[in-house]
Amino acid sequence: QVQVVESGGGLVQPGGSLRLSCAASGSIFSIYAMGWYRQAPGKQRELVATITSITNGGYTDYADSVKGRFTISRDNAKNTVNLQMNSLKPEDTAVYYCNVVSDYGTNYWGQGTQVTVSS
Image (tube, rainbow, N blue to C red; front, side, top):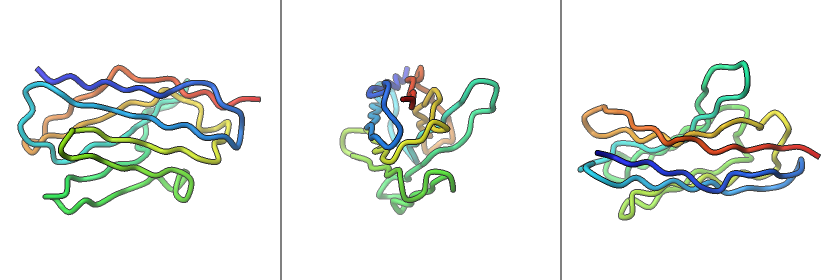
């Protein structure tokens, strides 16, 4: 089994910052990519940011809405991924999910962590 655990969500004022962390553990031999998705009430889950492993190029991808404000980083040795979120806006409010994709194409998801941006 594979466990994906997120941490770091919470309540923050507009313009503030939060850092999300995610750790993958268990029977996963090789990870192709890790990333973050979010789902706001009444909306579909959407990509926030992803990063491939160093062996797969270390490429990053961001949603247009977060470019320049969010930064994704990864520790390959520890199977962890972080999302630094700056200049947060109310529209960033959502449940954020960590996603792990194995080299075999299997997707694993965390349970989600709530991020609320409000004054």
